[in-house]
Amino acid sequence: MAQLIAYFSRADENYFSGALRTVPVGNTEIAANILQELTGAELFKIDPLLPYSKSYNECIAQAQEDQKRNARPELKKYPQSLEDYDVIYLGYPNYWGTMPMPVFTFLEHFDFTGKTIYPFCTHEGSGMGHSEQDIRRLCPGAKVEKGLAIHGGSVKNAKNALSTWAAH
Image (cartoon, rainbow, N blue to C red; front, side, top):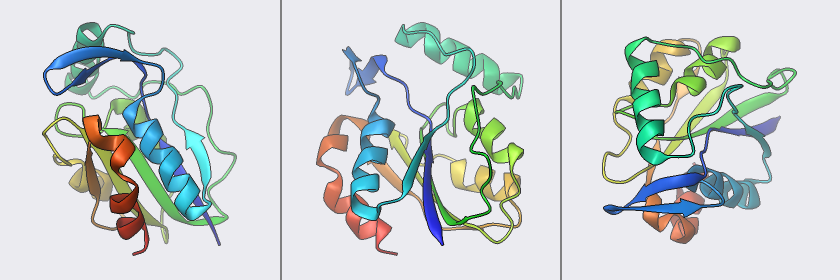
């Protein structure tokens, strides 16, 4: 059976160890690409139809408001089916203790019964938050394995951690 890496990532202005920097590729996308090199899994980017602001402060305000409203932002597209995948690597930045709401939209779109989900997140100090519990709640038929939290500012050096984790 095939493997899929589904991930949400945001470039533009981001927070790194106390400072804002503009980046062309988001941290979670960097981690997803490293994981793809290691596993050969197919990549799918979870992309909201209406993207968050390029400004970090506006983005986090939008993301927090989405979370408060329990919003399910519409996505640009979905994989045609997850039927052929038995393993799903699910990547996202930690937004307010969990996944960005577009990831909730993605998870609720499919039935993950019988699938194994390996969550990974990028963060600047907050780890996995309660995202693993949220995935278990949203995907009750799936086996959700222990996630990997990657410090965003160190993501380019995360190949060994990703390799060890992905070896399950």
